[in-house]
Length: 283
Image (cartoon, rainbow, N blue to C red; front, side):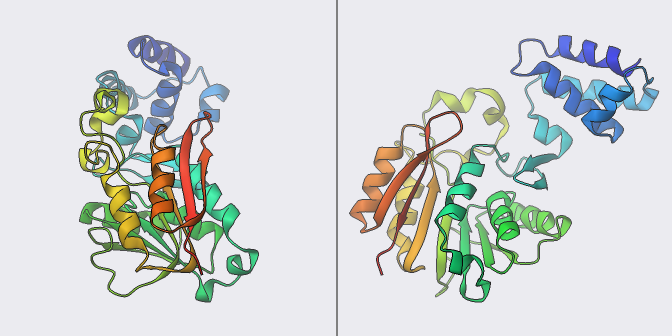
């Protein structure tokens, strides 16, 4: 089967999905070890029988709903390509807003003075946020925290593959294993979905670990916990920043203000929804 014919067949197999043509191209490029440009440049190339069989298997997995990132074992985030695993959430474009907002709010003096500048990423998963910040702030010290050892190992692997040396990863139940460590920035994309949400039965989320998604009846259990404990680990004047649900901006602002944080603000994602809320610990 030629490349162009294989893509037409795959798109029909995936018809009804969110992006059948895009998924087909990503999966075929992954199977043959080429980029998407190759597919457009050589549409008349005949696929090797083994490659065609692997492609058909990948399409069937996707047809049954498995996320593309789990099938390929990777996902692009920021300027990085990260290995993925069913043990962690799949990095999403909207999370890049969190990275952008943290970078925008760091004083220029801190950006260039990594010896005294430290960041903690709580619930690091693949390491996406921690590694993006470490890449942009090469002199800073970044610590990623995750409850799952599998996530810690995956994030460490992603740091190694992307040649990032200023990020380390620790297994911990939030702050439990951090002793007396203090940070200039605490950032987190924690679980924030309500336990009973119907969203858990939709799309790729069905395949992702529930422990990384759900957070009590109101979806705020973990954010509430982090805010309540953070002041012991955040330096005076330090920044705390969360990703959260589209309908949780006001609630997260209220929690931060009640805890004494200042300059609290919610920022929208690329779709115009509330997505990131930040605040500063008073000096």
